[in-house]
Length: 127
Image (cartoon, rainbow, N blue to C red; front, side, top):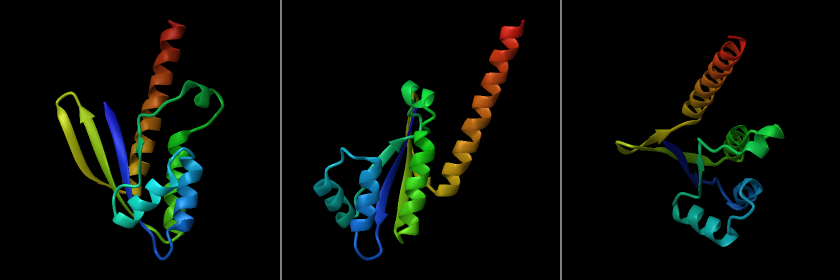
């Protein structure tokens, strides 16, 4: 299952501060492509909520938390964010509006599941 958040950025005034902040998270993203997407009102970037990297995890890097900070920073720069969540399931694909509150709920739920799995593993190890 994939959960992809796609973000359209509507800057207030100049797009330059938003572009600078987005490029800090996505350094490989083309400046021209990013700028054109923002100006045209197309999705500027996306993020897979199921993203996981073992090395980052071992180094204490939480990409979802950093992504959340990116969204907050863009809003603090005055940008209005238009987000959608695309869920790719074996039964098909759904797309729906997505908000920062939805993101926070997703993060809380994911943390609850992680903690439960950890407890279950600990119980299994004790038996």
